[in-house]
Length: 52
Image 1 (cartoon, rainbow, N blue to C red):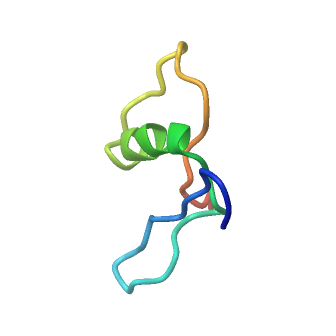
Image 2 (cartoon, rainbow, N blue to C red; image 1 turned 90 degrees about the vertical axis):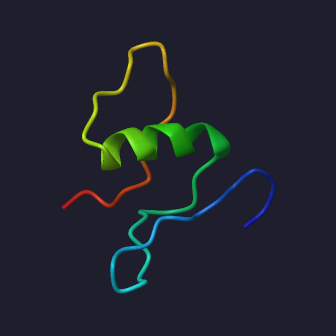
């Protein structure tokens, strides 16, 4: 990873639960997704969770 990219989401078995590396702006949206809360319209970025 380079620059501001990060990949920090893991499932219960310790496997990556992220689609791909994201940026710092995606962290809050990932936490909101884990908590099953909606993304506010004014927030840019995306959740890093894998979509089933």
